[in-house]
Picture (cartoon, rainbow, N blue to C red):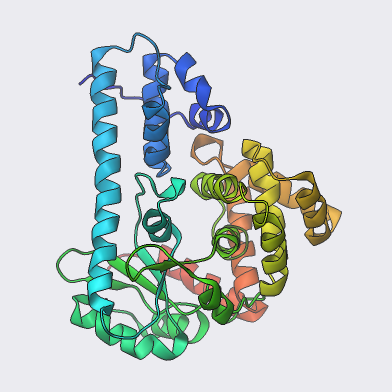
Length: 358
């Protein structure tokens, strides 16, 4: 297979995400570099889906066919590995009576949603009732997952402040499970009800449950625009676009999304999700929903600042502004913790980063 020692082309990828048909107009080398960018952005499944609909340069040389075959194999393996870990979790919880819900990527795979195709995940996220955390830890430990070594600060960080316990790593497969009891940290300014999420969770196969459609979108919005790092998170916006397109086919989805955003206190993240999905991908959000979400917008100066920061950081790659990325990074911590706690936490992380190696 021919090799190109060229950097991934994030600009081509961004263009293809907005206009998938543009892939057909690329040269073989441009297409290859866009594929590299998709792999780096964890969007290889999306890219392969476009290839499978015939969006590939005409008269593609043999080496590009080899690359496409490799991409298909990788995407299939990514998704297969996620399904295997879901199966192992089912076995761990079997007969326990513990209620558990798959979140994010694993949830998309289990529910057969578009963002789950060829999904590559760093960990499997699940939600369990807080009262069931000790039982959940014991069940997972018995199935091979265990905690890594943590210093006292990190232990306190997870146990007292966060919405999840420390990551559990399987002793043989090295797969990671993140066990959540909420979708935002205890110290966060927003506190969506986990009980409401459990009440409306829906089946996704035998003994599997995922979040309801509106909750799935709102969780993605909260993860990206309140609790997470926006820089380079183009896949998260793609997820939102695909979820909104799928669920939006049902007219009842849109009023439910608005009701649940208000009920869970997630109107601001929902506003950003609808705004940037529509801006980036032309997501077909009804005008009435956009008008409704305008009531959730921040003051105009803050909205303009967010627009400037997000537009510089979402695509990733060479177009990313480091200053904008760091500003959004600090913002996510500001929303996650009280001011003094943020200052101490970021100072501690900075000291760790620059501490000389013995």
